[in-house]
Length: 118
Image (cartoon, rainbow, N blue to C red; front, side, top):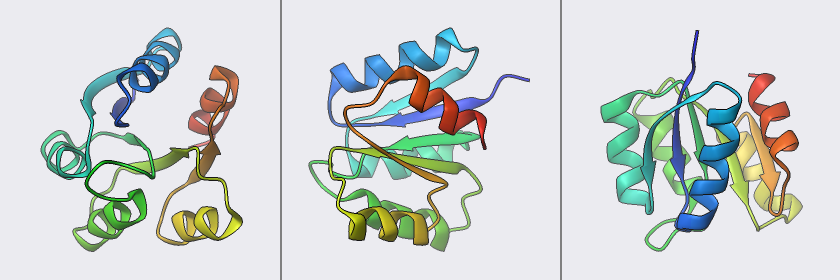
């Protein structure tokens, strides 16, 4: 069964890279968000199986979005993808419910490896 994915990243280029990698592997991208407000609205509207979540967005940080997701009982599995690779930030993301944390730049293989582990 195809998994539905929501991609959250403020960079159109990065959203396209992630979308192309996922669709080529048989995933169905149901939505894309460029900021935190869209990330929250679309997550609850679309109820995707998986969300790829950038940590630095124009209006919010990903860890704050994770707090909203868990506080509201969203069941989607979240993989954080960010250029921020500090151990403390990675630990915070994972402790707030992210299933994986991928540091940019990354390969399609890394992304698919983490998603397929879910």
